[in-house]
Image (cartoon, rainbow, N blue to C red; front, side, top):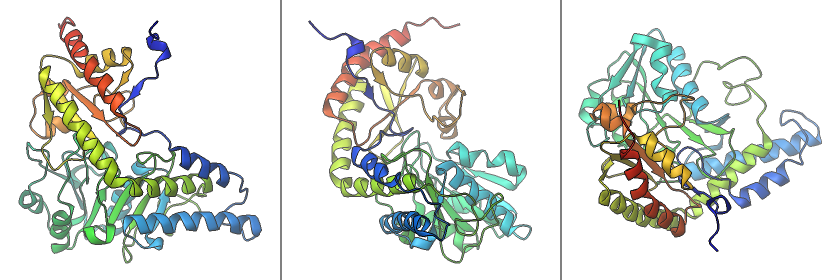
Length: 383
């Protein structure tokens, strides 16, 4: 007798939202959780905790192409992005009061418009999902404090020309920040070689724990203090860093780096299989190469994306309609609207994102379920 659906483990394909914790990383965290000291304390327990924190900082710096003192731990990518933009803007005002971002940023960057209002300029993005470097440069002048461009988009996976965007910023004396949360561990990332002044990364997109990330800040970049407290990180960010989370972050980043080439080849092969299956049932891929192999954005015309994801979920396949970082918010994808897709297409998007734990059996279950899910979604009555 076949197993019931309830007895079959679900297929998880939402790695761009969060990826499962790696077993070896969990072991490392288990060892670190035995340390009771506060890393700022001077006694033996404190020194032992501090040693783990600094070892994690050194490992992450080496993997990201940075210096250890350039790595500032945060609670995650969203906080790192917030510090980068708001603390930079505060420090450089009033001489430089403006911020430039692209139209396809993560909400932790795009909502800077709510904090800074008309001080923010939003640069357009091409239908391919990439910036035009000349149009980007046209938004920059001597009034800009900082510009920010996402390295790999979290919904459509497009890879941006970070080096050219950084060069354009520096020509007018602006700082350059990149949200590398989806890039770090998925494509080659080198902070020192990128030209970026600030870069955000996060643990739980690598197979590490939720609750920790880092803002990497080039030496010589001074930011205004962020919040109240002891300013433990870079003299800017306050709060006692978690020894266990820092150890887990470094472990996951190390494994992701070691596995990078083999994982990239495997995910690219899976991507070809999935996009072919989607095309066979009327789907089209959003976002042109270069893209991160693990993020696949599909539009099925004539359906609502959330209907497809609902049916797939009932069939044991877990995917999403886009960013999971706007709590309780549904509606057309702002990223797709920004690259010129109409509201119907922006409402029909389904994001499939692959990661370290994705197996060929998972892909086979997805492509077997996809035609039925799309057919059922198309049958849903519309007003």
